[in-house]
Image (tube, rainbow, N blue to C red):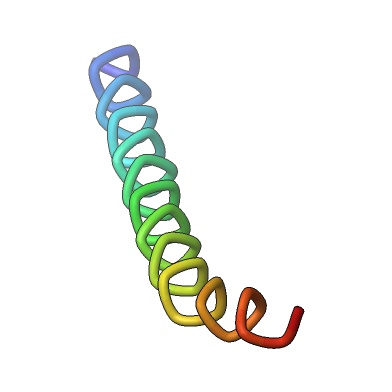
Length: 43
């Protein structure tokens, strides 16, 4: 019984890490799209 509970907690943890990873990649892509043209215009 405790093993299944541990697996469930581990699964929730993996989902949390995966969601954070997806959000960070989205944030990075948005940052690059918005600031890359401004950087190229400056130079």
